[in-house]
Figure: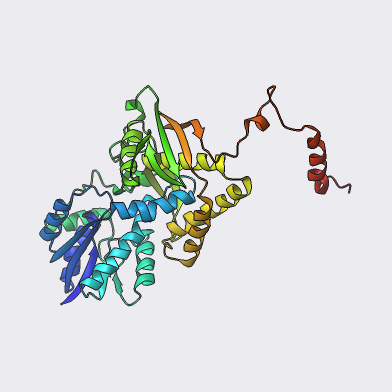
Length: 391
């Protein structure tokens, strides 16, 4: 019997994939990456076996995800189209990496996933697998099967008595990990519909958010978050803590009509409290310690970096080259940033760094001003010269 390793989340799509693959003569071995999933390892084991998988690997990859995938994106300032912190996109290359590893361990020639035929994740998984092991054959049931909608998948699952949580009344497609939650489908497909509260996981509503602001202080060493409120903390623990703090204040929600890799526009709703707090703090510290040319060029790099991640090109040479540039900028990014969280807003409160390029004696308009005003006119004359030529 042909063996296939299925990237299994426990959701509707991959649950339906197991019997579909078995009906076509495959021995299905599931691989599930715990990046902060809504399903427990015990639940995944139970659901996969009940659905027909012969074996399942459940790996806790949260620390690897935080250190080797989220942290580089944080340093790069990667935000896709100004609103998406790439939570799902960042997890896909890590999943693909371990999917390939499990296939090698199981001596399988096939891997499979439950990504849709018009989504981004099929690109991300397929491209990463091809980069890591081009000999593996990829099966994508959602590109092939007769089930043409989530409603038809629900009917298929009910007919086969598969363990699913999705209902026709609550038909969102949700992907959750420690860096954020991606929500799509259902009523969100109509651009005139305001998102309801029911799909949100990390954040409570603005109406329930406290009426008092809360301050958080984040300390960085060479671009790496190392302490929260003056308490040393590993990066994963800090993300988990900030998700709880930020979620209480309704921090990190975004609603985006984005450009998918396949060429269509799609509406996605996201929540990422910790991500937005850390990105805001990191960027603010960079504004204090990096010179303007590095900051300006780094913004260009961040734009291209986010596009590469969104398109699933994590293992590309260009992305690795951009990492080298980003890492070279991070040595002086050491210091503390204090933020106030209030009703969905992140406000800068304090900045402190031994590497600060800010000089009060030059910036002040008070009596201790050391700026030489006599230099200003000559500077402006030279600066304006190319633009002041008579025509």
